[in-house]
Length: 260
Image 1 (spheres, rainbow, N blue to C red):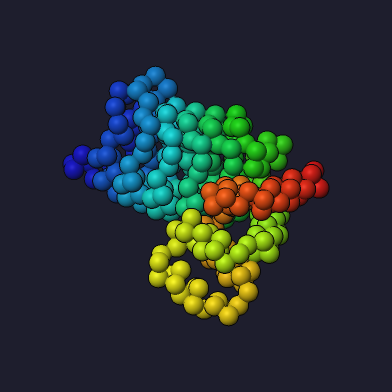
Image 2 (tube, rainbow, N blue to C red):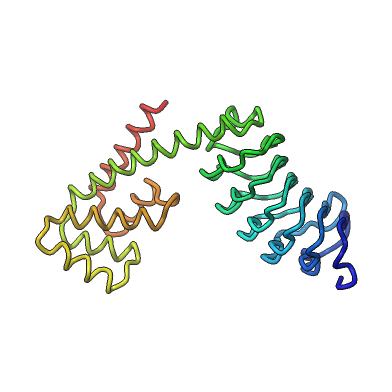
């Protein structure tokens, strides 16, 4: 591969590689790379080193069994066409949306259930394929046209609804906890001992709900998009706050019914 450093196009499709050939990632001048295995041996993983292909503009990885994308995919800033159809992707990394020049994105025939909230960053996409995925967020009827704008509108609206729901649920938790339970929340949220001591010291003269609100606020900031109602309910059950968990379930169901 060292003698091929100036190579601009490479086609390794329909071969019997057991793993993705890492040596390809050293070809910094590569502009077009094809690795479609419709009649070859399918690979499951892409190496983190794929981010070294900083000149690549067209990347064809369809007909494999790729289960996840490395975060380094965001290093491919020149990428215009990305073909990943007929794989086994169930999610996209957050960094995936940091591909400013992407125009063609083919993800049909995967296992995607949702798209990242920052999908709106992919403004240049004019050819989007998402069919044959079990999508629910956004649902298929939003994605069927292959346009980014309605998908973006749905995701932003859903994020705003989720934020409002999480605020209500956190207020409910704060209004129904005692000081010991606030300590238990910090423990299941994996706060350090130093953090716990500092927070308890800062809120020593404040009512328990003030401490709990602060704890929940820190947890949400750290978890970003993964701080979901379901996760919060699960944590409450872990510390035997079943009564409060049931209240949150009721709030969640009410919100879902009135959203329909």
